[in-house]
Length: 135
Image 1 (cartoon, rainbow, N blue to C red):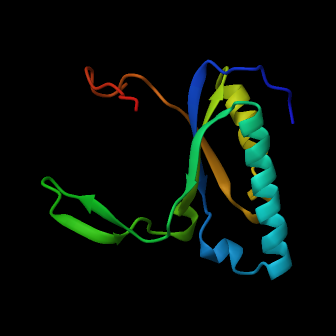
Image 2: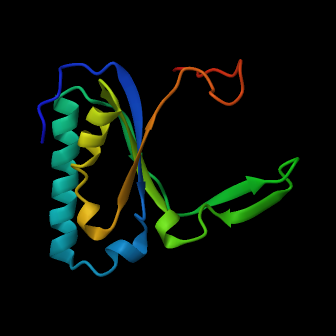
């Protein structure tokens, strides 16, 4: 893994897709344990570098709200297994390339999990006047 600068200038969201039960079901108990260790080591390394703002796994159940007034509510939150988002990390990086390098360390990539890397913006690039709010 590349040596990162001490503090990143921008926050990036890493979304872990195709991370549902189907991907992990074929793993033996020992393989699950090894993968868990790799995930914790990866996270701990990023945390020690002061790269992680926060991160959480997501439960598989949920709802999807749509329609003009939110009248359509269906079980979800996904249609296909490849769309299952298993969790996220908010990381600090100097630029998108550095955030992408961080994502390349994801321990579940060999299982077919993909990592979507997105810059977190202070202002909407679609609706002028909509801005982000911190804690």
